Image (cartoon, rainbow, N blue to C red):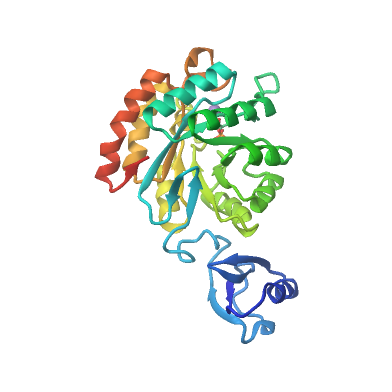
Length: 332
Ligand code: PEP
Ligand code: MN
């Protein structure tokens, strides 16, 4: 249950009440707010006379639930707002990994030339093998920060575990929590304390309920700027890398109050399918896309098969605005 306290209840009093009833305390809708398990349906007697409004839910999808904030939450990516009352479909693009200054600068220049406002690139890569390229780490973050300065791009980059959260927060505009890190409670809790937008990717074996509950960890930590990202789930199919769950996206749009971004690159796993899937995603009226683009995908150090080259991305990018317009959205 979400319990919104009356405006005259002080923070000190709210914290005391939270301890008394075993609730999480946060500020929500500008009010001192307590959040308990959804199993609790009655207001504890110690709160008598102090409650302004309560929200009762069937399960622990609470702070992210559409009925708590019907107007939808918004999240900031550099100068662009996603969700809320905007109609933006934002493009975030760049290589899977930051590999060198030349490579990331080529990507940054391409994005700048096309008017794309956010550059992605991983520096702490959660690879399936310890023998694969693991990312440039801090050196990569510094290169991304340089690109932000030089080309005025917002930076989206991932954390592999909780030890990187501080460094990523320092250099990035958006902290990406990858599919494999989605269950890492150290990461989720650290991001809950952060004053940075979080892009939370769905684990490939994660139900929608588990996915949104991971977002609840960040929201209940006090960080309201959470974006959900569907990037494909594992099914019986092996011809494509994963299966993009568009039914799940319809659920997230309807039942949650969070902006939703789609990642066609990791879902498909092969560059040939990415343009068509991207157009299908835009037609769903989503808040954003995250696409892997590399100056020379053949020599990419990670996810080589799925990255678009610059010409492929340029062609794709120009086809998107009319599709967005047709569903009442604006490509940014
Ligand atoms: C990535 O964005 O490069 C990545 C590793 O994605 P995911 O966590 O979705 O696998
Ligand atoms: Mn990748």
